[in-house]
Image (cartoon, rainbow, N blue to C red; front, side):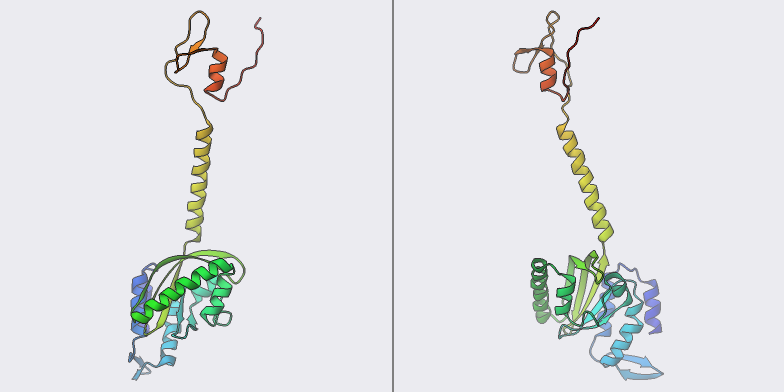
Length: 231
């Protein structure tokens, strides 16, 4: 455990692959660990203790799910982000109901999770590629996260990266750009050389017609004229 703590201290929190590697080591059948100077076979209780002592130190939100789709471990970062513990979310069914209250979105997520389960059944080392999901937290707030994960002997490790601020900043930037484009679209500009009669001051249009100066400018810009008599 001390060795793993040193490993965690140096790990890049975004290094999902390294986290998955550690998960696969801990969940490997027949893993031996040192405890009180005695080498013992790592049974589930031993693995759970390792999860608490090792994965609990990771600053990245993580949850461990067994082959019955029940959560057996959530680290502190997971609870800090979402508010949930295994008490509120004992299994994937409770997760779907709480994290995805919108029924349409919930069924979309259920369908994708079923696809992940099918992949894990075919491949015991199935890896969950990046998925962007919207999660409703225990306090009702909403977080946008990227979910990664891996399976090992039908157990799952799920890793969540909070990207809420980045996504909202991107949306705000896009909104500003769209507004600016809309403003530019509404602006009409006059440029280039305008052929104008030196006598009557009419302007020749692109179609070859001579138009009153006021009408031409009004048609090609947002300007409007008010008439008066100069002194």
